[in-house]
Length: 165
Length: 281
Image 1 (cartoon, rainbow over the protein chains, first blue to last red):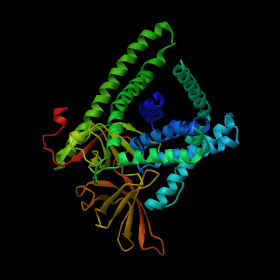
Image 2 (cartoon, rainbow over the protein chains, first blue to last red; image 1 turned 90 degrees about the vertical axis):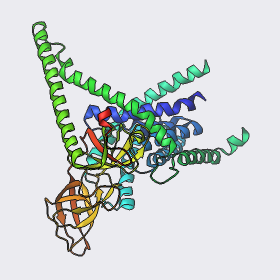
Image 3 (cartoon, each protein chain N blue to C red; image 1 turned 90 degrees about the horizontal axis):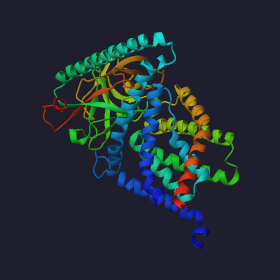
Image 4 (tube, rainbow over the protein chains, first blue to last red; image 1 turned 135 degrees about the horizontal axis):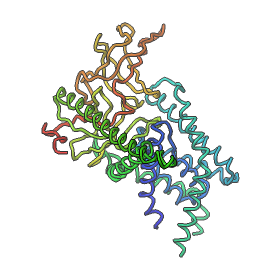
């Protein structure tokens, strides 16, 4: 129960930190979407209900604070969670290369979905100008994902230890 | 428990759908131009955090840039350099205050030009590298800000408010692909819809081929829809192209306001006295 009660404040702090920290330190050049890594981690490591609750809350907070397309992040995180969960049954999801590739593909996939959305819903001409920044950010996210996974695992282990005490 | 284990996937999908539906239900506005209750709560709870983090990081960065890099220099130079650094920091702070004053004065100038009730707001959170273009300001419904309220800087239109809580609001910037504003070219009166483009510029759509539009022309709001007053500067035409078999021309517009760097904005509010919220700040 504690886990579900802690989710909204944790999501809020995490999203506010990820938006302000990366933007201010890099002067708007870098974007580190930790919430996407969390959705991926949930797919690989968490149970169904816990993971689903996690991605829905994070997606909702992202939609409210930064999104301009209604429910985009919620849908996308659920999608990432489901795909990661399905993949985790077939593939060993602990290897660094595997995690990094998954994070890179998710970040890139998200950008492609936004470009497609802007084309099909808003009629913006299809172009990939300015996507180099997105690719850099996807690479950066992929490189840092194993660190985040290790951190989440530590948090999970310590939280589990606390609750079982 | 056996039932749960046996029908794990459908139960899981149902649970996700139920949780998602609950979120959507509570985040939906009851009336048009209203932000859903849950979204208001999230926006409201996040704004003090955003303020604290922004102030803390600004302070940290300033300290790092102006002071900490002196650590490690020789003792003799250290005291002198520290003094220089402190004086520079002081000077820099004075410069910052001077620049802020200039910005606020130009906003005030704009405020005098604008005959609507306005509220000055500070940007407390933004994500410039995101493909979605928005930021959060520290003024909300308590200050008269509504969904759809136009947001301006001294240079021109910045965007419009899409979500409002009691003390914060989310602004959709004019260079986001979801933002559309009825506009016309000041010099030739050619009308169109200004829509954001991903690279930071905008496109003036639906301008007939027959209309004369030139590079350097100014695009302003038409005042016909969206709550924007007529004649507010939106941007400057930077490129015009006409396809051989196309009904409309492609007009690329660069926003006049530097939406990525703006720190203070004016929000046009309705239904409040012109006594100005700023005077009370």
